Length: 326
Image 1: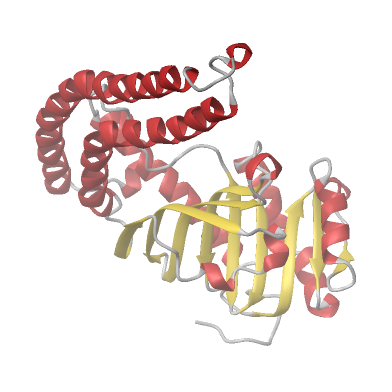
Image 2: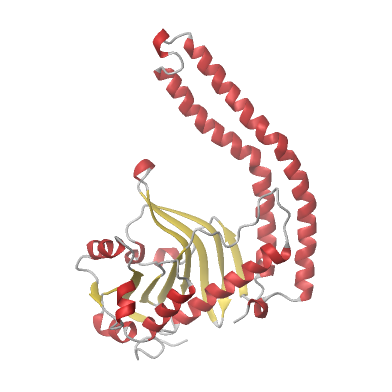
């Protein structure tokens, strides 16, 4: 598989580059405005904070100048205000970049049938993701969401961050790409494969308790990396020792730095690839947008992700007679 096989045609590329030319003109204007908006918005906010703190000195004990309880309140509120004002200062740049992504991404990823693109929306498939795949969380953040059909199957791909707790106790449970798809044949139960990484193995044993049972693939190298859990041992064994194991070996080779996870739950399949990279991010407003550097890599990244999902969805194709084929 080569990224060139999925690149849009010359007419589509011409349209994308025309959009990029319009973006470049607007980018230059917006960037110039940021050069005065950010110092102005941030500077005025800091001046107000300093002024309020100076006035509070008149009410504070001489030994508590600048650090009395009212001062601390002013600093806290001022910090929140500074974040808000800075966001307002850079808002035109964020809005411009998002408008380009809204137009360009469906064109760039033209090899996907019935493509739909959204931003900061809740994916339809997320509610069906087995909790056992990621553990407990109480907050989810979504960035880009792409759905459509690839290689004959519907999918939904999204960037997600899942967290538990708040403040200093907040823990990042998962950050990366989630691809939801329909397996070629549904799995009668739940089967989860997660890569062992330090405390992860202990976490899985403690979290799953007696609900999901452990099993091994029989491949010593793979069992050293992955932990398998299921509520249907009989149905899971031929997969874990067969095509799922082969798919996971390919995952390790393709995404060696990422503890990828796979979940099959009845008529749903999920591939989770932890990543800090934002796949559909454009360069900062100060940097010109280049087709070869910034646009074509999106095609290569998406093609690799969907090819991986296509492989994983077929792991049960020959493993069971139950379920429905497409």
